[in-house]
Image (tube, rainbow, N blue to C red; front, side, top):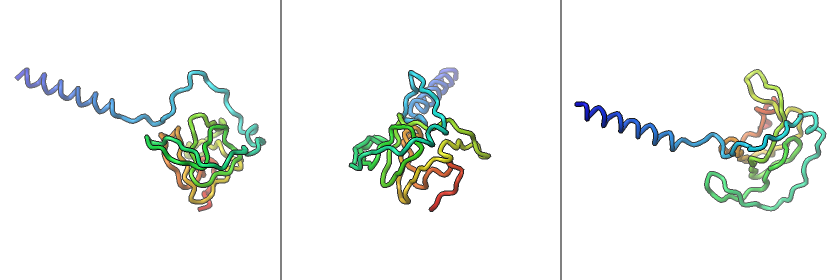
Length: 144
C-alpha cells in the first residue's frame, strides 16, 4: 500500500514539474541587465518620426523566419506603420498615466499612424499579433 502511494506521489510530482518546464513565458524579451532611463512622454511628443528604409526585413517571430515591412527598435511615439511591423525588445515607450481600466496611456498625444490592415507583432507581448491598432494605449477608439 505504501509503495503505491509513494509511486503515485512521485508520478504526480514528475507531472507537475514537467508542466512547469513547458510553460511559455509572457515575453520573448529577457530582463535588462542595465536599467534604461525612463522616457518622458512630453519629450517624445516633440520627436519627429524616424526616417526608416522601406525594404522587407527577415525577423524570427514565434520560431519562424518572416518578412516584415518595418522593425521598430527605437522609442515609439510619432511614426507611420503599415503592412507587417515587428516591435522588438529594444523598442521603448514613455512612462505614462493609467486610464480607468488600468491601461497605460503611453501613446496619448503621439502621432502614431497605423494604417488599416496592418499587423503589429510585439516582442514584449510574446510576439503576439495585433490587428486593431494601439487604441488601448492612446485612450481613443480605433478608426476601423
